[in-house]
Image 1 (cartoon, rainbow, N blue to C red):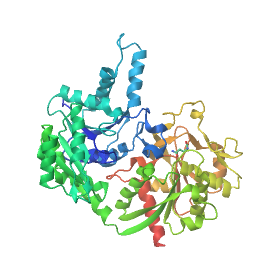
Image 2: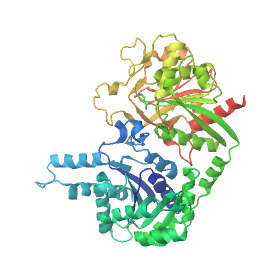
Image 3: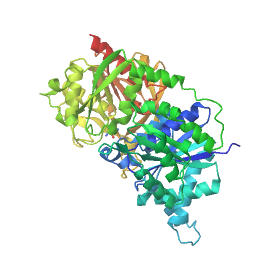
Image 4: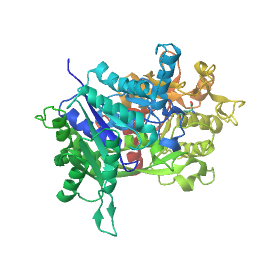
Amino acid sequence: MNKTKYVFVTGGVTSSLGKGIIAASLAKLLQRRGYSVTIQKLDPYINIDPGTLNPYEHGECFVTEDGAETDLDLGHYERYLNIATSQANNVTTGRIYQSVIEKERRGEFLGKTVQVIPHITDEIKHRIQLLGNTNNYDIVITEIGGTVGDIESLPYIEAVRQLQWELGDHNAIVIHLTLVPYLAAAGELKTKPTQHSVKMLMQSGITPNVLVCRTEHELNEGIKRKLALFCNVKQEAIIQSIDAETIYDVPLLMAEEGLDKVVLSQLNLSSATKPDLSQWNAFLKKHKNPKHTVEIGLIGKYVELHDAYKSISEAFIHAGAACETKVLIKWIHSEGISEKNAKEQLKGLHGILVAPGFGDRGIEGKINAIKYAREQKIPFLGICLGMQMAVIEFARNVLHLKDANSTEMNAKTKFPVISLMESQKKVTKKGGTMRLGAWNCELQAASIAKDIYTQKNISERHRHRYEFNNEFLSEIQSAGMIATGKNPETGLVEIIEIPKHPWFMGVQFHPEYKSTVLNPHPLFEGFVKATLEHSLT
Ligand code: GLN
């Protein structure tokens, strides 16, 4: 049996240094050297998962195949590694405490006082090792959320210290990601914040094995030597992470800096096989040398925070590269689109995407945008709530069902063309209770969807409570909006299209979650192609 090795990634000095991207880049390099690798994120907040969080707090909630609502970093892991993650890849303090408290209620601690040490730390260690042991990965990279020194991170840091001691040298290492700021007034890069941050880690009993230093300017040998000496890290293990043009450059920059080599040497693993990055490079080349440009309006209610739509914007990058097209996203706030100003706001766009969402804020704006896209024959993609709004718009403006709505927005509407799923009617708790994760969908033969997927049966990820109300299906279909994808078991409408429109599609699922660098999502590719054609007319 192979023995899993562990790499922990901690952050210092400040948040938002990009631990997720560094972890994903390292994982990519190790994977391309032939190692089996996965990445896990430990989040120190008390929510059980980010499913109940407002996107303004932490950005998008990413959904895995097995229906876990997770941190958006898992999206990066999947997009880089091209492998699916699962519930076990994202653990929060809330979940750790929940398990420990449930155990206590079952009497499993046999009368002992239950404490942060050892019970919480044991549960953390268990969750880390479970991932490696059950899947036999060569390497598990565990990213610890937050910044070293945060009170809430302490149990995680202690768990890492214990694991390092238990697993022994070369089996568990720590990469500490820090910032080396440039002081323009002094004209100098400053190492002191990093020194302090490492000191803080050392006070918790951990000496980092590798320092990855975010910087706006090259670190010269002198700076590296200083960092090595004062942080007790080998000089070759001081890795510069200079600001990159795109996040997809980071694996290459890390390869140049030798991050993967240093990590393998610290883990006593062979670095004889060089990472084969030919496919990655081919993607980057296309991404950076587009032949065409299109502009797509992304209409949502959280557009001030682009992270709220991370998977969608990344899916456009993957699809854009595949079509050798630069996709410019115009972020448009749904609340600002009225029937009157729709033309002014949306004219010139080559495509319109209406984003997922919850609640009634901004939905009339979404409906106005969809009307414009439908009537002006602009390629349209509606995702989840975006699809539901397309059905409402059609019912209101084509079928003249006045005030047709979703029961989410108006429980008493006369025309509930979107209504709560039967399975949701008894649900009272908010967390983890939506229709989540992968579900099957069967495509109708003559449809854009079938042409795009080139297969009849597909599976996509979901996150919703409401659905197309099949009582209105025949009326809506007779008027020209067709359900071209359905769940084969329940008949739930998964895809709607308007065949008379050049490219109009609404999907109840979230294609964006499955788009990766190596496998751009066919729907996004199809949409970008349609916008490109539209731009040429
Ligand atoms: N609020 C809608 C529902 O629950 C759509 C959800 C979404 O867009 N993810 O069905």
